[in-house]
Length: 88
Image 1: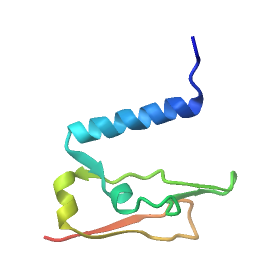
Image 2: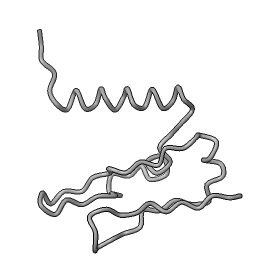
Image 3: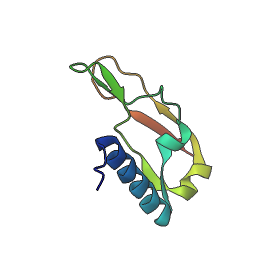
């Protein structure tokens, strides 16, 4: 019996989430349009780390209607908002 590392469990959870989203015809709009690992939505001052903690779960069809999405830099708070503009 081999115990899985915490990273293996996290990766399995991410794969399971992505599979579930795909089955439901959903996607994370922000991560789809901002795949670079240098674009973050959260900064932990106490740990000095950046991460993507926010999600914009939408139906896949919205991607064709999305004019733009942007992670708005924020120096006052630990979270940066995600701004999305949709064609109507």
